[in-house]
Image 1 (cartoon, one colour):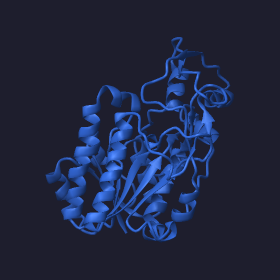
Image 2 (cartoon, one colour):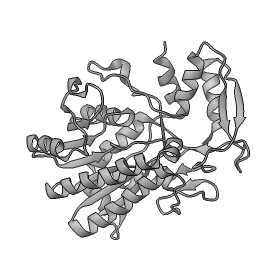
Image 3 (spheres, helix red, strand yellow):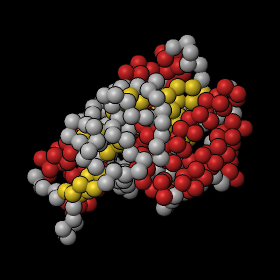
Image 4 (cartoon, helix red, strand yellow):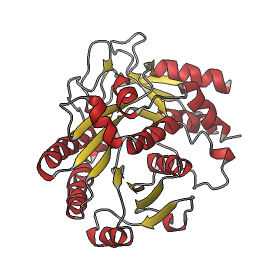
Length: 331
């Protein structure tokens, strides 16, 4: 089996580790840095922008035996998308549309899409299933939603199949990083944990801004589902290995398109995450209450029963493990 993985950023390179660890060949495309000099067993790295269809076609010519695509090469960040919507729709929708058309023309019919929990609306109790109402509040979330709808139509019209993995909030680093004989340059994400680590490492007095403490949650701060990045990466491997069976296990109505939540299944408020970070590091973080951010919702966390049923996946790590792994990198 050979996988085409688009994107080798924070999420992509952790998926690359998981594919390599499980002896799955991977062709990996990214348009940043010196990726062509990266090395992992069973992986082929190319500096290539997927919106450059000519360059992408050359890679596909070299690897005519690609079975399935994991598409993560999209720009992210809710707040940034509000200020720069054109950039997000151009890359995440228009660019991805042209890329998927190329895959269709090449006869590559199986796609795993890196979607997002940001497609969901607020729901009572905050736990969302794949059937919960969809109401993305930001250009980032709407770009993910549009691509999901687009893939539904492609699958119905062009005999393709797609699994959209709705990622919740990935944090941490590769759990096995310090044990690896072959490793990639470290890439951390833009998330709550990284904000706290940067504040901790900053010599100057810096405060952590909590974006609103008047949400209708147990402590007034937003509820999120923080998933260890190694667990998220492994969900992609499980989706690859169990791709065809996933549709059968989901039920007769799921013939060519399936959305699956990928989260820890545990709800954690921003304040609770902050307390866990302080307890693990033994350091106190100065905080200040700020305004709610445009595009945020009060909370959501994943019901992960469908992931267990269809792709035989469940998380192995806690949010505390993600904090410990990340802080160990600073030692």
